[in-house]
Length: 318
Image (cartoon, rainbow, N blue to C red; front, side, top):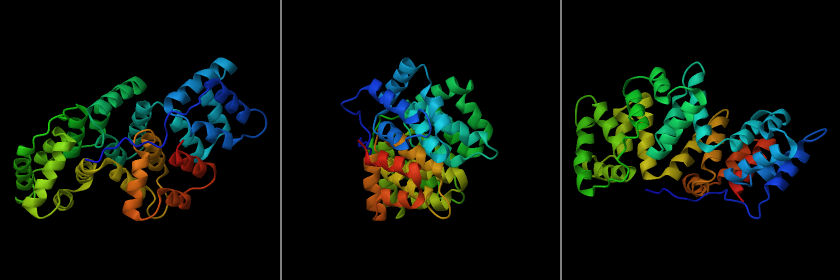
């Protein structure tokens, strides 16, 4: 399936949280800010270490590091640094909330975050969302989206995927059901698609998609492109791409974020920060294999200043 543990950011050794806290205070004290010093510390420590620095900063100076960073930094660079300081599941919960808070929901964010994660991660995101916003993620999503797309997301939020079940002998039969629900019939039975994609393990789905191609002569992704539409299509394609290779999916998402006029900076930050301690090094390799250039070179073309420096520093790793 291509899931890989291949981070760019690992625990940094030797590590002295107090020394780092002092370095950050010096970088923000007095007139002007030493952004390079901030980048050198915060992009080269893992999340657990950044949290220790936060604690030491308060102990040593009686100050809130997050507040100090907010008052000293600005723009996209500030957003990136604050994302680094956020606990992982709190950050993803806030990204989902942001996607629904504005007029017009950003379904791409809902799809990217929820259709790529397994049960345990979704459970942690659900808990973080409830704690941070005092309401249920499922209720918010149900009021923002509709139809088969809503039903698919609700199934994912109930953590009903049979993650540890792999039954190769059933893959062909499942592929037949998918074919019969789509290409093999007039119209499309969306419910058959959503139920199968939400309930089976990513490993099982990979086997199903291999069998599907034998039956149809088309890949499942090609079939979904022609049989489905809108947000449901994107969600089903995301689950399919994630089943094939998670790092490749995120490499493709990064490319999309930098396509055309303007850059989707929130997607750039979200993916680079949230994958940095999981598989960002694997994503870089997939990006090179897909597009024959480095992710770094494209980021340089799309970003500038301290924001660019910090992104490149995370990509370089420690």
